[in-house]
Each structure stands twice: as C-alpha cells, then as structure tokens.
Image (cartoon, rainbow over all chains, first blue to last red; front, side, top):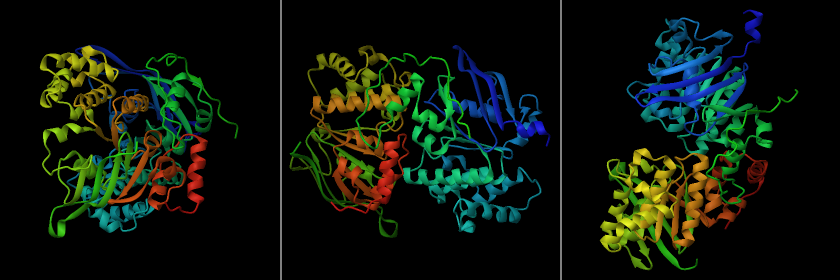
Length: 296
Length: 271
C-alpha cells in the first residue's frame, strides 16, 4: 500500500449529479453532492423519501451506471481510485468483497429457494473462488457466532422463510461483513423489523463494524437511529446536502432551516404534542451549513 | 370522556385447528371511552391487528362479546354497524382503488351508506376534501397522482364520509415521512373533538403514541399485559415488556435519553 492510499478516505464523492431522461423530459435528482468517509468511520446520509439518498448508494455500488436513462456526472473515489476509471470487471469484483450492502428488508433480499448455507457459500466465493462448501460453512459459523447466532448448523441448513425477520437481518449483516469489506452501505437497515429487534440488530452492527474497522455509509430517514449509530451526519434535501457535521454537533445545534424542521417534527417520548409544521419550505434552499469537526 | 363506547369482553381469537392452532388473542377485555384515543401497541404477532379486525367485524371472535353502546355486535354485521366503525389503513395506496378517481371512491362510501340526498353528495365530497386540507378539485384526480400524505388524507376523508363514531387507525403514519406524519397526526388530533370521534390507534411507534393517545394498551403475544393512561405508561411502566418497548425507541434529545436511562434503573411499578 502506498502512503497516498493510506491517507485516502474510504469513499470520496465530489460534485455528484444525477438526472433521469424520460419521455416527459429530464428530471434532475442529485444537484452536486459531495461527501467523504474516512476508514472506519460511520457516516449517515439522512433525508426524506425522494431526497436522493438511495440513488447515491446505488451510484457508489455502480448499479445506476448501467441504466441507459441515467445521466451521471461528478467523481466517486473508493480508496483513492476513481471508480469511473477502473475496468467494469474490476468494479464488479469490488462488490461483495471490498464494498458490500445491507438492504431494508432482509427477508426479501435473501433468495427464497436456496438455503442460507448455499447463499453464504456464494458470498464467500466472491473473495475466494475455490472455496468448498464445507470450508465456507466453517467460516460462516464463525461469523454467525459474531452476530449472536450460536446454532449455525440449523441456520445454515434453513431457508430464509424458516427464520424470523430479526434472524434474517443478522444473517444479512454476517454476509455483508463476511469478506471483510472496507465499506459497508446500509440502506435503512431494520426499518422492516420490530422496534426491539431493530434496536438489537443496530447495536450488533455497530459493535461489529467497530471491531472490524469497517467504514459505513448509513442511509436512513430515522433521526433517532442516526443519532445512535453515526459519527458524522449529512442531511440531504431534494438532491442537495444542506447540513453536515459530527452527530453530536448537529443534534445539539441544528442550524439549517430544513434540519431544524426535520428534528422538530419527530415526536418525542417525553411528550409535548405534535408540532405544527408549515407547508411552505422557506429557507430549505439555504446554502450548506458545515459544523466544524471537534478537535480530538 | 367517561361513557364506554365500545367494549371487548373476554375476547379470544383462534386461527386454524388441532396442532396447527394459533391463539392470536387471549381473553382480552378492553373498553374504548367516548371521545378517547386508545393506543394499541405491540410488536408483530402481538395480536393488535386481530383486535382491529374483530372490532371492524371482518371476522368474529372465537369467544367473547364486542359491544357498541351496550348493544352486542353480531358476528355478521349489518350496514349500520359497519358505518359506525371505519378503518384507515397503513398503506393508503392499497386502500384506494387505483382505477377510480378520488371523488368516485369517496362518493361510493356516501352511496353505500345512503348519506344525504343523492343530489348533494357531489358537494359533500368537496366539503370533506376541504375538511382534511385538500383542494376540492382533487376529486377528479387518480390515487397514483397523489403523494403518500395526500392519499392518507383522502382515506381519512372517506372514513369521515360515513359519519362514523370510531376510527380504527392501523399504523396510519408509519409509511409517511416525518414532516408529513406530523401534519397527518395534527389533522387527526383536530378532527377528533370536532367530529366527536373516538380512535383506536394501532401502532408500534411509541413516540407517536406518547403524543396522541389518552390511554395505552400494551399487547404481547395476544395478551393484554398493561393498560394505563399515557403519562403513567411512559413515566412508570409496570410491565417489563412495556419497558423494553420504550427503551428500544430511537430518540433524538437528551431529555429522552435520560428518560430511557431512568426506566432502565428504576424498579418496576404495579398499577
């Protein structure tokens, strides 16, 4: 590893724009997004539906580039390498190995016709093509133990529909981290789960990425979950980043009008009623607010 | 808010038979007071949707009685019973017929229940739309051209059209963004006294419950484990399951964090 790649952020996105061309005309979705994630850092991208958070993740994974109607510009660098400049085959190799993803609904992202063991084998073969099923099962058992699944044999021989949603989510987390990725993209993980299960899996995921030093791009609409998981936050509104900074700073002192309204709208378990939210979006187009990084 | 409007007496619901039998609701007794917002909370499999379906008359209880104003509701409901209790679902897109305009969907409710003279129903639809904060010309639009929040307002307007007394709100805002959620919850809060409604608010989101419900019924695996007014449930939860539910809520302020911390330390209460 060269010194320059040691210093490089795990993910650096600069001035990313995205638009879709259709028979209706052109729809601009991202208006120049810039964000970066340092090695081992947990960064949240928080916004409402349609704000552009999921498409950002899909561009990082290289999934939207294949779409003929998508117009993308800007730069996405992974560990110092421009992802547009590398060969598609090499880019394909990165997915599932150096970068992996966890989706919202674990049960529908697992293949219903294969057992967990077979799917784990597939995942591990991404990094080591000659791995046998038995060797993969051993590796899988070790990783499943890390996500608090002790009876790995039962789980590996089960189909996804035979396991609970929380169990499937843990399996997904285990699979996503199986190849020791440098970057994990988690798109609304646990939203489809019960609150207590969501809290457990989130806690588990946090511990695991901390132990493995994995950088995480955490996509969510839930500010409470973001506060509990992320080191740093980017708030996105209609394809623009409106506020960014360390999690504590943003939650202690939200400065952008949109961030303020967003936080005000979250019902509190301490009560206080449902706030009145104005329909007009005055100030939501204000320029980006950056909170300085605390000196450590 | 003192007279009992709707009551469940020792209601049990079983599905299936023999070894496959599932006990979805286990001997639940519960009262909804007139004008009240009663929250039913619990996780998946707790039986909260089964309770809602029995209240709506979609299926009868296996055992027990459901009464409205003291009158026992029959297993097969009559039109007048169905009119009294209306449902607002989680996903308004699936609740609205995609091939029917908003106005036609709402008109159907008025026609079925023969509310007002036929000649005035078109105007009634406009009034109802305005009552939930939508422009009257939305009557000509199709569900697909509306946002999630607008569709949920239409679903609420349609429930109001029937001049119902009880709304069963089944996760009415969990598919909505937080800003839209706040607006829809405020609308529901305003309509309740104005329309003399009572709500059965089914949800897993305790932070919403805290701010909208008068009383909370906590369900675990088909059993009612705790029932108390909202402040008591949150300040001094008695059942360990209630505590675990509150402690799992992701929160954003320091006050909320300290409440969760206090619940984790405090001994359990009985009430």
